[in-house]
Length: 286
Picture 1 (cartoon, rainbow, N blue to C red):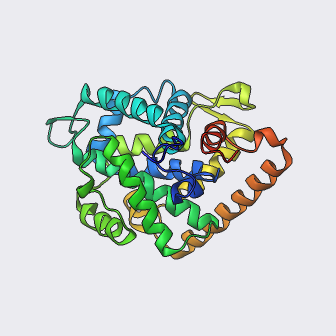
Picture 2 (picture 1 turned 135 degrees about the vertical axis):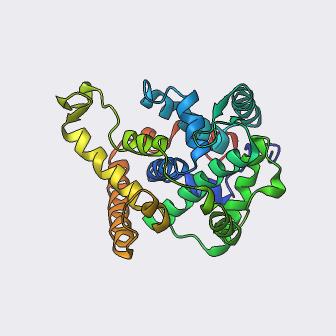
Picture 3 (picture 1 turned 90 degrees about the vertical axis):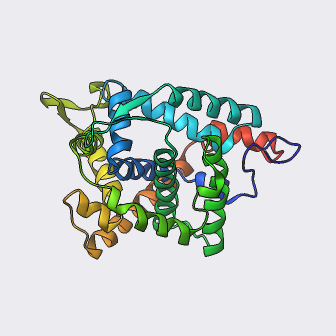
């Protein structure tokens, strides 16, 4: 951990803090789920052990809280959160849909895939939304995030820690990826999740509602999917055309500008997320 002020895992001088202050990273999180679902074992582990279908918004909140804690939490909070997740994973297993083999959820190869898909998605989304990062800062972000992977029990020497190493990792793992029934069902669920009627949607048939919230979410999910690498979109049966990347970038930048405008209009006490505010106070920067 860093320093005597208990600035947690990263601290105010890190690229991680610079990157994760961007609200647009919520779309990066969604992109990472589409990407993670292309690993047959990883998605099978989620489907067979998760309550995401019955409580998708609760799971999203818990995942967001974990990520926020790792980024901004105190030393004690970070270790406690990681320890809980390690214990949870250690009790879980699943059946490989292709071979019928039972495997542990905390296999290093699976944990590594989830980690890299997540951090690459955060970084990719932030840069394409317009956040200016130098190539050195990009490599520093990946290097900093090795600490988060180590908390999950991974050997840091096995984690790609630069942009070039991450690109090489994706190139090497692509033969292991593919579309399964779990992948398709998970991607469909991510695109059309249940939306509470209290959010302003009206039911039109079983399992589907329409309304302002639904249409807004369609736009978010469509942008997250379009942000996937061309090879990943093709695995889902989508287009890998460069024009899709251009459209996704334009949509993402527009969303970032909209979010910045909305945040600028709210009272000062709502401009900074509570976890970040607490971290800034511990660092003496509030």
